[in-house]
Length: 180
Image (cartoon, rainbow, N blue to C red; front, side, top):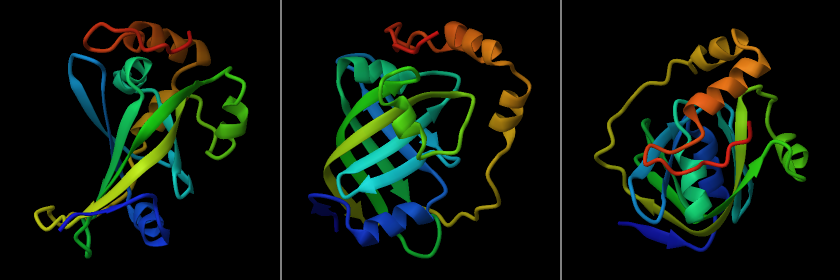
C-alpha cells in the first residue's frame, strides 16, 4: 500500500543511499515525457525537502529543456535487493549551470567531473513509498567506467562541441539552455 509523507525521513534517506541508480522524470507543457536512469556519484540528499543532482553529459538533455517550461520533477528509486520498495520524491527543480553564481557552492558537494552540464536543485513537495513487490531481484556488479573513459578521451573544447551538437535542443526541438 502506498504511503505519502511531506518530506524525507531518516529511513528514506538511508534507502536512497543504498541504491546504485535512480530515475528522473520530467515533461514540458507538451511533447514527450522523459524518464532517464541515472547513476554514478551524482546525487546528494541535502535535507528532508532538498536534493541536489549533478547532471553529466549524455546523448540528450531533456530534463534541462523541460525545466525551462515546467519546473516539476519526479525522482524514483527501486530496490532490486532484499527489501521490496519503491520511493518517489515529487517536487520542483531549478537548473544551475556552470558559471551561475551558485554553481561553485553546489558543485563542491560532488566529485569534480569535467562533463558536468547542470546541477538540479530539487525542492520536495511530497514523498511516496510503495511496495515494489513486482520489481525483480538484480545483482549490482559495479559502476560502468564508460562515461569516464569518454571524458578522458575528450578535451574541454570537445565536450563543449558535443553539447553544441547533441545537447542544445530536446528531442521535441525545444531549447535546453545548456551553455556553450
